[in-house]
Length: 261
Image (tube, rainbow, N blue to C red; front, side, top):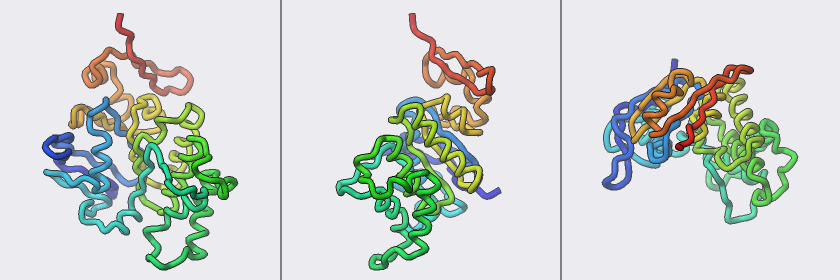
């Protein structure tokens, strides 16, 4: 199976501070994986290395078999789309204009969007149920609506992999579920690889078949939710007692910290 994202003995960080240490893992194409771990464990740094925003000081990173740092920006945009926590625009763009920016990498500096470009944008908005708001100002949308538009923008890139950086952290539970169901459908129906960073262990366990648990820049555990979300592993990683329960209705795992008395 083709590897969508591969880290091999990667060390990376900022200035003189190394955040990731000897990090090795492989995400096969078509997988939906969550990167979890406490604050400061290196989750966001991992995504920045994956997108070549940060170059590793040791080791190698590949995206679909290509060295990430050597990928031209246009090719990278066709392979990887990023859904951040927030998107703010200095200009009052409409929803349709925001989604159209997903086609930027495929357009030359002077070429206007073609019929094909507009068709791709319309399909992305239909998929995310944002077509009905295409003329609304992006700034006027709710948090959940904005994230759906951002996903539509990323879809307009037509990437083979989507990286999500705490993309649901500021949403209420209804909109969080709405966004995750769209991403899950993309993974199952379109075969898009998804790597999501999340603080929400329960959400990660519900939607992802594989979890990568980071602890101080190293891989503490790698496996299914049942293999990674054990009370022993989580207590060692998060430095607190936890209880892991199984939902009798659907078999999903529920993680709760134990109150300190």
